[in-house]
Image (cartoon, rainbow, N blue to C red; front, side, top):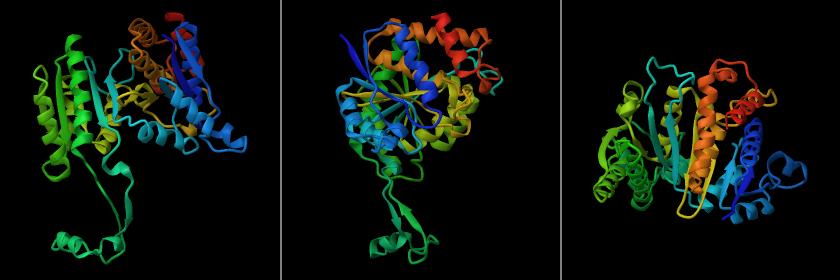
Length: 354
């Protein structure tokens, strides 16, 4: 059955990795229908919004979206893909490919996945002036803690719900079960600051314990977030599937990417119950836009995740293996990996190994 993919190139340097990734998909002659709505700067120049109604309609009629990154011009697309499509599980694989420029002395065997709850926590963006919290209940709660609600300052609300946590953990459990069939440990690690934030992060780990217990084949462990940050560097090979609230997942997946070669090699996918979109973890890289040197690995591996989502495992492994071959060969690596190749030269090498 033909799968429809909406292509949103994104802003700044992001199109420079999305376009060649799409060309690789086209060269594979897969049963894909590619939708290319006008978005971003081109849509704005045409006199409209960076994410016009026509683009929204293409997202809605597609089976998945392949997205670049946004610096603001395509922000509406991100909001629709996340909140509108309820893509609650942001999956960020941390897997070292031999030949990638890891700063660790022994990166061999790093192969785990961070599942970041994608819709809650501080990322709800509910913020304001402290004067809004001058109610008695808040004054009583901060009494004796050295905070003056009457002074100048701002606040932000951290919101964790049982429903939001449970569905993210359930996704992590299914992923761990799948990885166990592939020879991995089949372990879920819950991470939060539950020793201090006993209500919000406490609820997160309590819910994680309960949900994992319903999946008898899955092992379980939990770490305070700062302890986990240390573990990411000292014993990353011990990890399998890690689930955490939104903010920690965003920060620590970037840290994990740093151990395997940087953001240029880090893909991601955001999954809901009936929709998913895929994007590199890195941003729009405006400082190198137009230079043709941005690393396309993360975008290509995001497309690999999309092919797996479409249940096209042979095609996914073909593309993933070609990327691995480029790194093993070492002759067409981009500057962030210690090479001198352009984005186009890297992608030409990938195509040669396909």
